[in-house]
Image 1 (cartoon, rainbow, N blue to C red):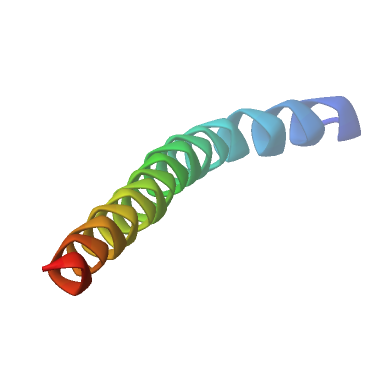
Image 2: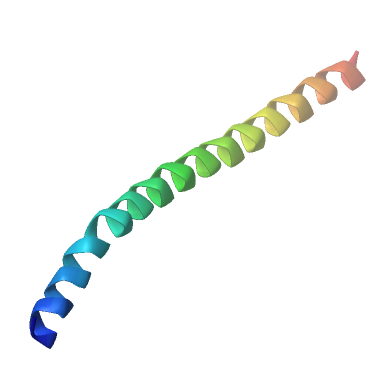
Length: 56
């Protein structure tokens, strides 16, 4: 077995974990961004409702 064969085998064996890690990263990033946006909108709505309550 030549060093080139070893390099190819190692490279091919690392591709699936790297792809799964990349997919996991993208999914988690989108979940966390959606959560932060939702919290931002919720706090804005809550501030508006508190302002309405203070007006009464």
